Length: 87
Image (cartoon, rainbow, N blue to C red; front, side, top):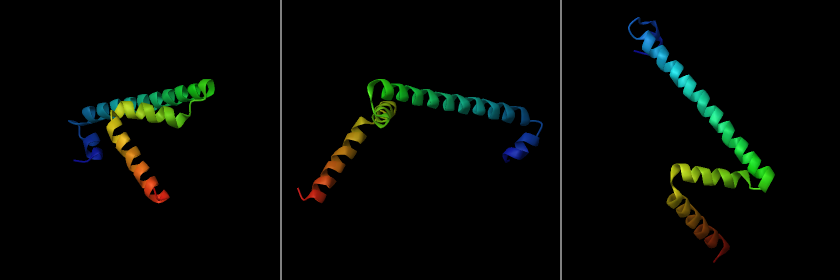
């Protein structure tokens, strides 16, 4: 059954519509929260000259809890730059 059929079926219509509406509400909340994060980054940039990219990197790393992965990427980058520079 595809979504169109589910919306036309009297047995499934109510649940599918409810699920769609719930998902839309969640998606709107997510967009709102993303804007709040952008606003925080802007304030930090304006008040303390903290680059937005640095703020976002810290937040992203903490959210994903992937500091080890990020450190490995930095180490790889350092090795590659060393090779390119002939070190």
